Length: 244
Length: 332
Image (cartoon, rainbow over all chains, first blue to last red; front, side):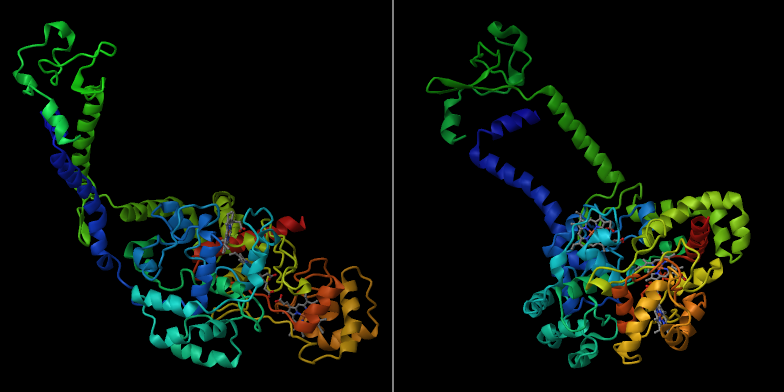
């Protein structure tokens, strides 16, 4: 009976088109409809801070260099991952990530909670030549990261992110390039306004060990050191507290 | 298919109304789509649609039964799973399913089970009685794989897979960072596991409020020593480990006045002040004259991260025992 319905439908072009549209839209609606309410599914955690201009620039470099091709930033809901990395990642940890960098390929370790695990010195050595610190490493070397950081695009990028809901103020956007440099040059005169605009949570350091020049290395290390430190929301999962 | 085609097909009736098959096609008589007047393709034995496009006819092969059943079974299967498992999005929530399956609670439960499984030996490591733990061969045998894993995950990147450390190099030649060996019997700070556990907890020069603090002053850059004094000291310090440095030289005098307070008389270290022995063959930043000059000129202050937040008490105590054991293994 069903077959005959189909057989006859095939002979009525309008009917067939309507049928195709109906069938395809069921699949489409199931996938698209949840996006309309996506803002309601992930809350912004109360202790969440957005990334600073320098960290944001580092994030761009992370994407440019394709680090996500080997590193995920998501601790999966598996017992052994919880054991190794800590509580599994929750959506609200990445509410400000556009695009998110969860990744799915893990040639290297997960980096979701990397921040402050290693020293800046270690990161610099490791990125310049991973085999200097991990003799068996198959991670590529990134020697060009010691080149000066181009800060011109950070402000406009923050403006775009602001339209997507990242709470950057106009003042933060206007001072993006200065603050990017200030975060890596803590002793310079430009560092004064940084704390006013960004509070005392972001670390101000010469991430690459050289406080005179702001390099791509500064940005990338600042970004890596911020991973997992922006919010503690994953630890607020009550089931987890007794586990660890 | 255009409507023109439709008009070409004649005689469409419900196949179930047919009274049996065409006598020429006996075995195909149960085909629900076979209609009177339809043609059988002589090569394949299938009916055709009856259309004729310049002599070419289209087969009307019936939908294979096996695929039909696969379709029916998968529809039934999906209906069952929709009921049992999380399935349909409903705005900001979703249908949760009768089985109450949820990956997050599953993972937490499974992790709790893992914790329980290890509890009988792991809980012992919450105590500070390291001597008793180290003597308990059964517990140590169970704990060793876990200690190795913890070390590999957290410490090996800096201190080396065997605790051999890594002498400074990299950025700017002699400027590079160094990571001390843990498998020798020389300690910057302490050799007892309970003290090592504390070093691991708060780190050295870390951002932990109780961090250990160790700084080799920048004698040259900050003008605390004349360049000529440093010129004397550099080869003298470099010769210490080979025993070629004269203990009565002028350099020895400068060392006694300026350096021994931290590095010990003759640079033997062991003052638990964070300053290393300079007489052994192990170097954090390098034993070449160039590296030693860089150390004395610019100063050094290595950063050992604090592990209080990342690792539990038990995990840090396990590591402390493991690290203390590395040096015993290395010394043998």
